[in-house]
Each structure stands twice: as C-alpha cells, then as structure tokens.
Image (cartoon, rainbow, N blue to C red; front, top):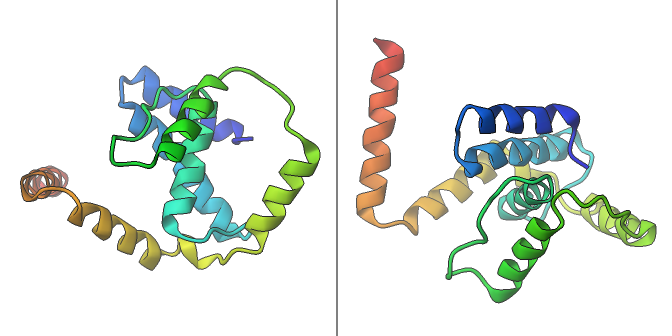
Length: 148
C-alpha cells in the first residue's frame, strides 16, 4: 500500500498536467526509499523500479503497458495492475507475507546511487543517438535556466 504522501504528490502532478510517467515517478521514488531504509530489498534497480510502477498502476496512474519490446508476461502483469486500479480487494495474507519475506532476503544495494546510475546509463544506451542528443540538449537548457 503506497503512503498517503506519495498518492498526494502523484495527484498534485496530475492536476498540474504532468505526464503519467512523472506521476508514477513518485511511487518509484517511494520504493527506492523503502529499500534504502531497509524495509526490504530488490534483486536489481530494474526490479525496484518495476515494483514502483506496479504500485502506481494499482493506485490509478494511467500508465500504458510497456512497449512491444517487453515480454508478454510483463505486459500481462501491467494490464492486470491497471485493471485493479480503484478496486480494494484484500490480498491473500499468506501470499503477501511470502512476497515480503522474499524481498527482505534480497540485497539493499539495488537502490544505491551507483546501481541506479548504472541502470539509467544502460537504458540510455538502448535509445537511439538522436533521442540521447535531444535529452542532452534539454538538460543543457535546464541547467542554463537554473544558473541564469
């Protein structure tokens, strides 16, 4: 269950007209914080992000399922999470406990700055050069605006 503060931040982002990925970013951030606090772990930065996106979809953020490059299982899971939005069905206690226990056994290093940086760079490498160049240009504009 996401924290009230996270849901409120996502709603604020929605009211401001921000994209669904920005709204979902709040949930991902919360998940990273949970791992850093030691509530549970994750096998990789990718898994930590996936947990956050899943929570966002269940909380009603209109995130599209991943693109065609993702596995069929991931797409199915994303659709199921989106369908569960707004439906407060009580999950199985035994299953929840088992999932939480499995995550507790995972390493906490998945949420380190180094791991997240590594993930971001790997994700960027998969994008075409044109998209990377556009992102760099936008970052430079943002920096110039903040400094000037």
